[in-house]
Image (cartoon, rainbow, N blue to C red; front, side, top):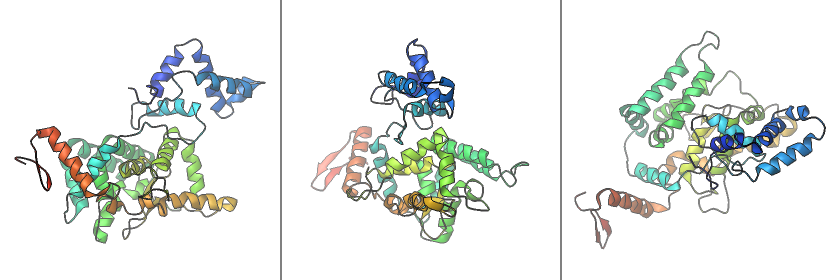
Length: 346
């Protein structure tokens, strides 16, 4: 599975390194350097040992390796990646933009009275979607003798499985379906069973939740991906730096099931955010507000339903061309008219 420009995923690169007599001890040293107080075990000169190990590993397949969201042994892959990187760059290989352009175009062509209800019906018809959705709903509503009304860790694990394994065609329609009334919006808000996965008696401090997130390889990676794909920019025509709305949606769903799980704040708007507050932030209040602003006032997340009608695709004509190209590849039956491409027999 070649994921990065260097042609390696971190698991494969790690296996190659571990079987090499020169690379293996350097990787072990580096892991000690980043494992809390692990560098203490290295004794005097630990900093030099760590720097030398890092420099040496830059010339191995480990340099530039990446991981794939939802891959088998994802956490192991990410542990290797974060041993080599101290920045907040995303460890995931980029997804193809066209995949999301196609999805957004197809979604924008369907207009129904209740898209959220239609999305639920579509999921129930698909075997994979129906099975994994049933699993997470069951996990999130089942009472636990130890945890009370529900087992949140079990619920979150099941939610992550759903959003990682079910195609975005289904998950995005369920979570981002446009609503015109509060009943529909409430159905949409309830998608992730927020009583178990999201809400709590009190709202914890956002920065405390973010620290917990960054201590976990998977959550840290999902947060890095979200920051990259949903980064606002005044220099972009769309207001979003990457101009790939599909990738932003995918990055958003990647946070669900983590300590900073986002959801709709109510059933009257499309505002989203994690279940936390900036109370008791002390001198870090501004930093905390910046974290919440990335959700509350992020133009990339300002209008989910609007984006489902091709907000980040450059107009209807691009959708029309993509759909034309799809049909051409499938049927190779077309003709050109003064009004554009026409499909014979379609």
